[in-house]
Length: 65
Image (tube, rainbow, N blue to C red):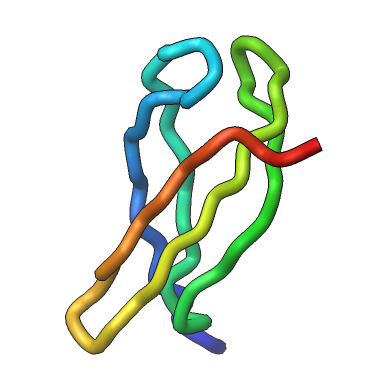
């Protein structure tokens, strides 16, 4: 069985300003992807990096269309 490190992160949608929560997988060194806001449905780019102690960088911005 593989242990997957998961951290819950609260952040503000850059499009509508609503605070939303997301579960981040920390076992891959970081990720970058586009996901729709669960409130306003606008696409947002989420990117983060992970170092030896956990989440080291987190950025959310409107996705370029």
